[in-house]
Image 1 (spheres, helix red, strand yellow):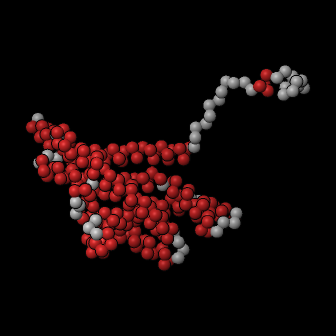
Image 2 (image 1 turned 90 degrees about the vertical axis):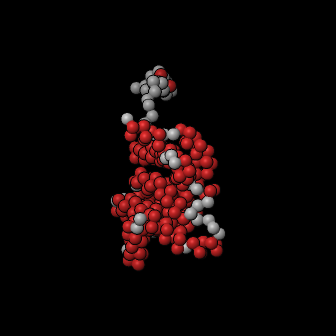
Image 3 (image 1 turned 45 degrees about the vertical axis):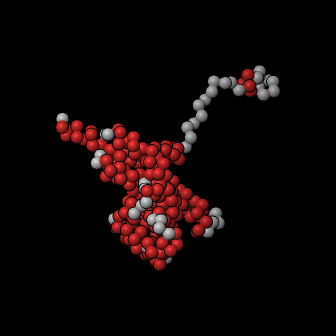
Length: 259
C-alpha cells in the first residue's frame, strides 16, 4: 500500500490544489484561452489558404504550400516555438516590448496551419467533382464555386478532425512557457509547475490537467452533436392526433369530399 499512499499524497493533496485554484482561475485560464483561441483563428485562416494553394493547378502555389506543410508538421512544436520566439525576439522587443505572447501565438498558429491546412484540403477534395461542374454550369466562376459550394461542404465534412486539432492546440499552448513568462503571463501548466516547485507536491499539476480536461471534453461532445445534426438534419416532426377541419366536413358541403 505504500506506493498507493505515496501516489495519493503526491498528486491528491487537496490543500495544495485549493491554494493554486484562485490563480489558476484568474491568471492561468484566461491566458490559456487567449493563446489557444488566437492561434486557432489565425491558424484556421492560414490553413484554409494552404488548403486552397495545395489543390491549385499552379505549381508555384502548390509546391510552397506542400513544403510548408511538410516542414511544420515534421518539426517538434517546442522547436518551432523556440525558433520563432527566440529568433524573432529582437524584432518583438522593438514592436511590442517584452511580451512573448505575440510570438508565441504566431508560432502556435504556424504549427496549427500546417495540420489544419491538410484537414481542410482532404475535406475539399472529398467533395464530388460534379458539385463543381454543376456550379460552373450555373454560371459561377471557379473562385465563386469554391467559396460558395465546395469549401462549405468540405469544411462540414472534416469538422470533427478540425476540432481535434484545436484540442491539440489548447494543450500545445503550455509550451509557450519556454519563452519565459512573468507572473501575470503564466498559463495553466506554468502555474502548476511553479506551485509544484514551491511546495514539492505535484497536486497543482494535476489540477492544471483537470482544467485542460474541462476545456477539451465538452468541446468534443458539442462538436460531435453539431456534426450529427449536420449529417442527419433535424428530427422529423411527430404526427399529431388532431383531425383536420376539412375531414369533419359533411359530404356535399364546402370543404367536404362530396361525390
